[in-house]
Image (cartoon, rainbow over all chains, first blue to last red; front, top):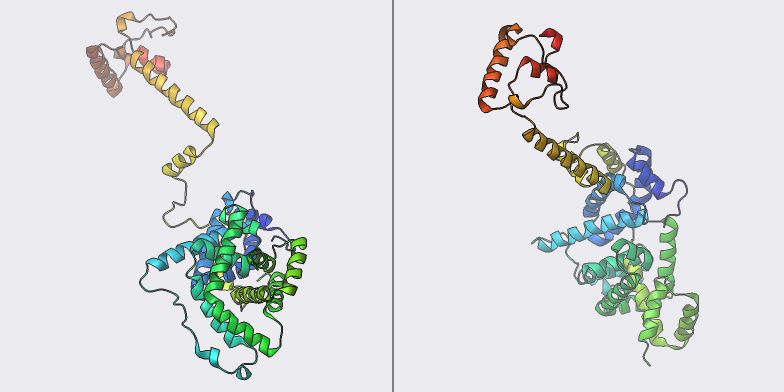
Length: 219
Length: 183
C-alpha cells in the first residue's frame, strides 16, 4: 500500500514524531481521503466520519513518537480508525437514538427503467439496503467486509490491521459475503435483471472498473 | 451439482485473491454453469454497491486545526514532567535501570543502618583512630561567641543527657560545619 512518490509513510511518521509540520501535512493529505472514506462507509455518516477522522489523526499525532516500525504504517493507521469505529458502534448500540437509521425499502424499484436510464436509483436503493444488512453483521465481519471491498486491502493486510491470522480474515470475509448475499438476494436479482435488460456492462465488469479506479485514485 | 467450492472461488476472484491457476479453472466452470454465472453477478453487485460513490476531499481546516495541536500537551497532562511522570517513566525503564535503582536503594538502607549504629559514647571515642582521625581542637567551647555558643552548648547538654557524642567544637570542626580556624 505504500507506493507513493516522495517520502515513505515511515519517513513521514518519523518526521511527525520529530515535530515536523511539513511531514504531518503530507501524511494528512496522503491518507485522509482513504481513512475518511473508510470511516464514512463504516459509520454511514459523513459528519461522524469527519469527527472520527480528526480524532484518528490526533491519535496518530500523539502516538507517532512511540511508533515501532515492525508493521506497516498504513495498517497502524487503519487499526486506529477501526478501533474508533468499534467504539462508535458500541456507543450507538447503547444510545436510544441511533445516529443512522437504515433506510426502508424505497419505492424507486418500481419506476420504469426508461425514466432513470443510468440505474442510479436502483444502486442508491440497494446501497441503503446493503447498509442495513451490514448492521446485522458482527463488528468483526463488518470490518473485514469494508476493509476488503471498500478499501481493496488484501487478506494479509487486513490480518495485520486486526491482528488475527490471515485465514481468520479470509473466513470472516466469506462469512460476511454469504450472509449479505442471503439477505440481499431479492434486491440484487432486481438490480442485475435491470442492468441486463439495459444491455450495458454486466455487474462483474462494472465492479472491476470501479475497483481499478479506486486503486488508481487511492480514494 | 454442488457448486459451493466454486462459489467460494467466485468470492476470492472478485476480491482479487485467487491465483492464476484457480482462476482459469473457475473460468472454465463458469462457461458451463448458469447458476454460478448468476452467483458471480450477485456477488459483484454486492461489492460494487459497497464501493464509495463520492470522493473524500481533503479538509484544510481540519489539517490546520491538527497542526495547532502539535506540541500541545493533552488535557490534564502537565506541561513539564512532574514527580509522578518521572516515577512512571522510571517504572517503564528496562532492567538495567532497575538494577541501578535497587543498588541505590540497598546503599541508602545500609547508610541508614550505619547512621543508627554509628554514634558512640564520648568516653569510647579514640581521637586519631580511623573513626575520628582529627584531633580535638585545643580551644574551649567558651571561645565561641553569641548565639552559636548557646546553640552548641544547648545541643551539648541534650546530647550528653541522651548518651550520645557531645556536640562540641571538636565535633563541629570534625564534620566541617564550622571551619576550625573560626573557632
